[in-house]
Length: 56
Picture (cartoon, rainbow, N blue to C red):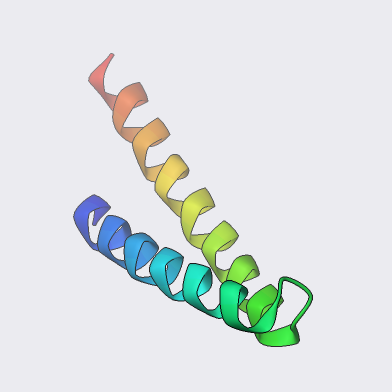
């Protein structure tokens, strides 16, 4: 699951950088993508946190 999240994060990050540069950071679509990226990053950190806790 972690590698799937990483790929989705990187893909969305590249797309967000492109759109942000073209449309500006206040564009509604750019804001929506940014929120999606935040959500994916939160999921990624939760997965990693759980894995670290499971290690102990």
